[in-house]
Length: 273
Image 1 (cartoon, rainbow, N blue to C red):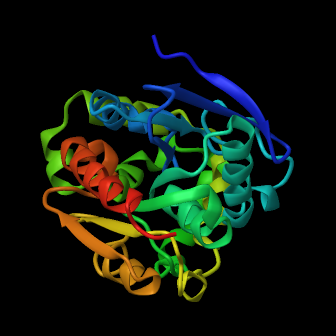
Image 2: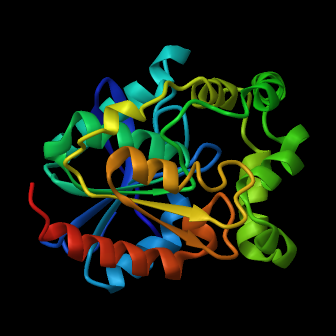
């Protein structure tokens, strides 16, 4: 059974799971909206097997972390400060920060604003721009805030997974469909801040942290170039597209993601700071 620990960071009680050798290079894993740290379980197992430490945490307002006192506390800017405080509280920096979707919004801000805490960044199905589907997502977010996840579960599943994963079905799809269906109306505040996030493109110029942007070929939310080429261009990093993956790249293709992360880490450790 996976043991969940808690730490006080930036005024929040954040839940996290810490596994792997304590003296190894450490990954900090930041999850997507509608998920929890558990979305990284398959990836963590592969990183631990490769000899790396992995700390996966829940954002405030989601998973087992404390709820937000108000909606403003759920901004991507504040969640980045949560991540910074968590790294310092646990004494694990500099880390290799990995973020899927919302988690990528957080890790890019972390790299731009706290580069001494970050050795490398990898985004998965993410963006460094404002929400380009604001008009489409706003009514969905409003409904989430009133009714929670169950009434819109089919829409959420389509957004969060690729065609291949949805067609294949199986335990992964069943688990997360049940999880998202059980989300209460408070998830609406989290989603509001995700779609109303600020642009960070220009802030990444001259970023000293090596950035890898991984895009899912079947991403229904942030397809290329948003989740790959645009992030690479902003940060001076590089991008890769994974075939058959949708928005939840870490869950859908953990083998490919683990391989790319290890490769990125090995290149980054020797990169000038």
